[in-house]
Image (cartoon, rainbow, N blue to C red; front, side, top):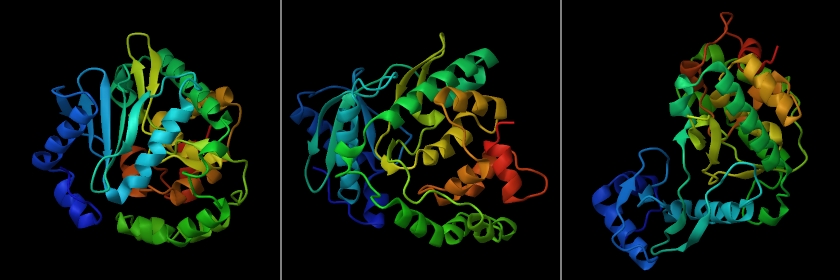
Length: 307
């Protein structure tokens, strides 16, 4: 019931259209034994995702993103019970029709940390940050090799080279002013990132939008969205930590790294920020304060410093 989606144009036309997507999601739910369950589409995320009643979540992947569906199903299945925070339990995953894939998973309890953050007292923020650091440390301690057949990039050094080659164009496409883009080549040239690091299982978007909390506790209740998972250098995961969990708060990042068990050079983390697959520096500059001198070196300290 869902049409083929292989191009950006087909994606833009079909994926947002509930008159097309909802009947397909309902048909798939019926095939999975959930006929008649109410469907509520989540507004966040790049893929179409539905709450199926109160207990399940259905995530759909068109043909253009079919590999992501395979990866998410495999990663979630592998991680079940391995972390100190809950991850969705996979009920079923596989192929639907016309190249679409799906993951049917349990629905985690809690409120998004991004939503709850402003209402948390300082001590509660510190408690949640501590729990998040414990979760990320546990994730990075998991052996990633059983997932190497579905997760890239394989050669970390080659991945860095590709990202480096497109770094300036990527930020210009997002509208970054020349005063910043002109600094990128020299800045990246001064940062020596590991080309063959210890291989860790990376979430890649370990951010408040993908963490759930019981705000009355508070305590961390869930971590989700493993679709963009990779295998590589664990410092790469600290981009989202600094930008979206500790949000430029040096004391909170210091607590996070102390609990995690390792600190990172701020310049290294800003370099990974510029090389990240989803890097969007203009967005980050709208979210977090920038130093008055307008230099990338100072920006690294402002966002990823712990002093």
